[in-house]
Image (tube, rainbow over all chains, first blue to last red; front, top):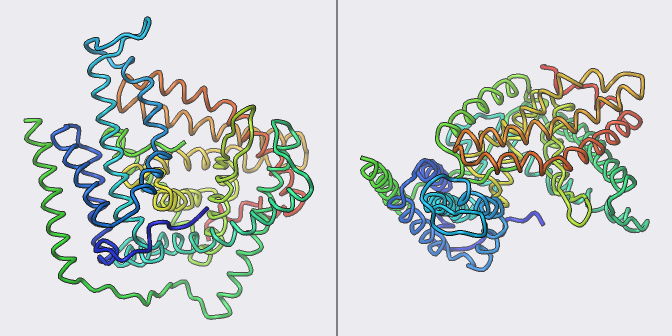
Length: 252
Length: 205
């Protein structure tokens, strides 16, 4: 269940310097999130699609991811056309859908999916450990990086623990239903998970102290900026600047 | 509980990021390096616990658990939730970079509030008091989160009003379930490992 589906591959995007990817992903997300004009948003969506293609990712898997995440967007589509004030576009019984509402909802949809695609294309194509190391070289706070790397490391261990507990419950014929017994069992499951992780944390900390842990997390990975990275970074910066100009001039 | 990318307006995103930065810096200041492994293991426990789907009638909801997170971690639940959300964004694309700040605030602030409201009450000897406090902690943490999500939507665009109201109402069953789960979970922890609830993580080193 917890796997990095897109992180392996040998496309151009996979071989990029992770620092470059993080910078581009952040800049693109911010610019796209504050854009409100279709003149800027549609090119942004096209750009994100291009990045997915460049990463040679399985289109089916990407679409599946998008479907899962678009729940809230779908929810908004049920409401926005009717609650946004403006000119009437269509009627469903007594409900009146407005042009502005539909435009606003589609604006959000395009924006959301463009950002999601870029996140899949850039961040999900890097392993989480590499991302952590890259972030530490980009001068993110030390403690956050440590917490990030440790948390990711233990998610897998605790997920296994969780499966052991769930299996033990299943062996004892536990069937989740809407009743107090179910909720109590789940609460004890969570409690047990916390107790076990608490004990484990203590053991880990002592083991680390024994091995001379002084609070520093040294990374051995070195990243080298290659020609491709420079080219990619400059093209992407130009493209993002283009989006800014499109958005800005469209307002003026 | 997550707000997706692209929904909120720039002022809301910036406010969220600023508030999150403030909360996180308080949390980081209180979190010494020696506590990082412990906070990390608990963060991942919460990450995994949020994957648990609890049945309710014909559908199911997943646990949020920001109430217990707040009880156990105090201010440290800001960095803890930030990291869990960042991992969810990278691994499942739930949430994202620009909404990371506001989502962190929406989840962690209720946790901190519950820590101050119920942290002491939960540890009372009397079972009725501690049970009521635990239920209220679970119930209110989700309730506050829902209200914060609603506020961020309404401040983005007035026409989100009905969506926002619906989100709060739809979270009512989640609040009750979280309340029940928190109640039993706290009772379990008190019996099995009371020192977890001692709030050691909450105190600065």
